[in-house]
Image: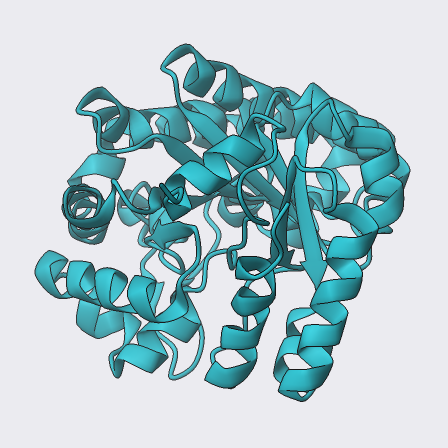
Length: 348
């Protein structure tokens, strides 16, 4: 009996060899919503239509993981910003964004109300859609809900440039803010975990990029809140997917320290080196370039790159074929299909 997509990727999470190479996009909200013929704004308050979009696109894309709420991550900050006059602006192309940053001091952190995250109507929509998607296809696919990582979410509250400077000038603010965000995200996920609608967190922490912070900053500011989240999740029997952008080849061991189940690497990372460091210690995935390859290459070229990537990193199990980041909404379907087909046809 063939393994389901969910069973396939969970086997890889255990660092085992499933029947074939596991494969998934990461997020995919922009591509899926465009392909479905809708918009972020249209789906934001319609759990039924958001569910329909996720289920329809899951069968079309065929990834082992379905990411509910991909692209709605900024609402986790804006939901706490209403008392500060902060809202959301929708874009013609791209995910919704904050209208302003609103935490300027440790005193401002004390004014934030974690419980407000569950009062936001868009967050409610995403939570309800996650439940419904899990009910409909959760036995076939691994259903998750996306969020920013604590470091990135904290930077959304404070403002990225100010936050980066604060890692040097005001580290106490950064430490308190990332800890607050870890607690906020645990609070966000708790109802879905409690009612059995979620067996995997999906965390994107792009501001913790290897192109933005050094290994010492990573160890001090980004790893501890990630470990807090993953420890909580593991205690509930829940996995954690982590993706961090940029070249993190100089801190590969730190991903083990996060306690996350799997790390999905950016295309800048040497995937062969990642295997050398992580194989047998942590599941890892990567790292086909979403723009240079999936968007701009022919289907035949995509197939070649996917085969080369699996050959470098994925022949021994404990590996997932995944793009180096979220995928642009304009990737040709044929390229996305070939990307998945290579993994489907690669038997262990």
